[in-house]
Each structure stands twice: as C-alpha cells, then as structure tokens.
Image (cartoon, rainbow, N blue to C red; front, top):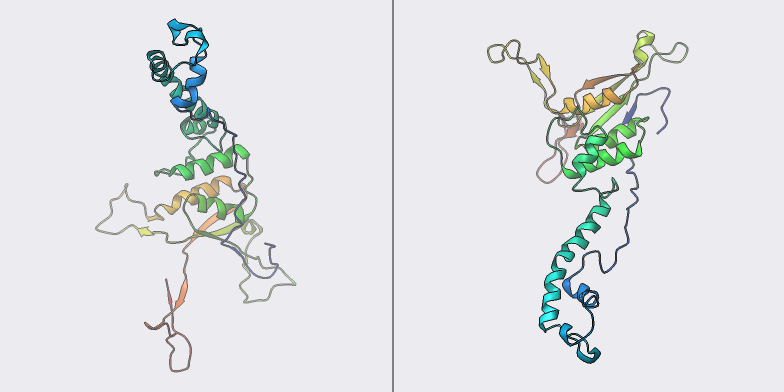
Length: 260
C-alpha cells in the first residue's frame, strides 16, 4: 500500500505469507511394526536345526525362535520411530518436543508477552525469528499482531505542508519532531482508569490498556528509535437495524449510527 500525500494512511489488513511446508521423506522404517522388522531379525541367526531352520528351511514365525526374535525386536520399534521423530526436531518448521530449547537459543518468548501462548503462536514466533523476517511496513506489524491474537490498525498521519495543505484540514500541524509517529488501535482493547475510592495509590496505574499493552510493547520495541507509537481507542461505527435487517433512519432519512 502506497502512502497518500494528502490523507492519513490506514493499515488494518495483511497478505498472509506463503509458508513452504518442509516435508521429510519417510519409508517403512519411519514408524515400523514388528512384522516390518521380523524378516531382517531372523536373518541374523545362523542356519541349522538348532536355530529353527533345518536343511535351510525358512524359520517358522510361530516357533520358539520366531517368537524370541519378536521379543528382541520390540525395543527397535520404538527406537526407529523415536529416531525419526528427532529428525524433525532439527528444523524450526517441524520442531515440537525441543521447542523450549529452540526458544532459549533464540531469546524467545518475547519479553513483552507475559501470558500463556499457544504452541502455534510460539512456533510462528520461532519461525519468524529464525528466518529473520523484517518488520519494515505497517502491514508486517499487523501480520505479527495477528499471530499473537491481536487485531490492530495503524494510522500514519499526514503532516501539514505549506503550499499543499489547507487550513482547517485534518493535516496535523506541529514541529518536525512530530513527523515520526504512528497511531496504533487495538480492537476490543480493555481500558481501565484509576478510580477514587476503589483504586490503590502506588499499586493501580492511572491508565491501563490491559492485555493490549503487550502488543504495543512489541511494536515500540521493533520500531525505529525515532518513531513513536501512540495508542488510541478503536471506535467502530455501525448502523442501527431492525430485527428484519432494515436500517433505522431519522425523520430526514439519515441512518442512525452508534459507536461500538
């Protein structure tokens, strides 16, 4: 999305990244059964009547040597399957059991997120860290916020420009230092204030955005040092409708809207 020179730029959607699925080819021994290993196991015994193969006959699977071989092969069923699972732990795309170790090696989870994260969210953060994906566009921040379960909107205000902007327009006026700021809105953010008679001095903050402060912390951490992220309430406007879906209007035919 190109930045408009005359109106604020809003970014609240993103294009999902195409994740190449890492497929590791498997074979019959990736998760073998005892029947898959019995033929190879019987070949280790020497031929002869003492080993269940008189005159070169095939060893009976129901004989004592066949049953004994099955017992010996039982641990190898687990060994082969376990070894194959550990192969997948060598990549961040297929890591599962070693996810904690992967996170420790790459400084995860992010210090801004204090709550419990799902395995999918942790894997998404790990893959992004390993791939060193850049965050250089508002759409990238919207995408990362969605990975952590937040819906955000980023507004890039247009600054007042002499010879171009109009007096009284919505172009922001101010010093040059104000040019580097963005407005961040978090959908369904819970806002709490210090209440006289209910809140406690030295304990309750004067103003809190609840859980949405976590994504704001992450955005401020990843933004360049000269860019300020300013939180603002996400106010949505919706038309009032009847039970049948008809829009309610006033005496002049204008639809009646409410803020959500």
